[in-house]
Length: 89
Image (cartoon, rainbow, N blue to C red; front, side, top):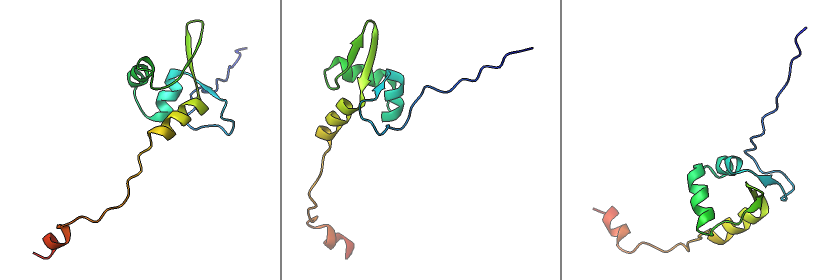
């Protein structure tokens, strides 16, 4: 008789409701849609905070979202001068 083992995927692509969820580098890279190397570069430059547990590196979702909020750029709409004149041609 063969025993069947059912595996559940560990990769989480959407944030959970509790913002204390801890992501691995692979999970966070997938969530942010960046490559693992980019995440490493951001970590080494001090851009995103991380947790080190022995040799394992983990990221707290709330910390990463707080950093992303500070990086959000909102432009004020300004009329383009001369653009309307170009449309009349």
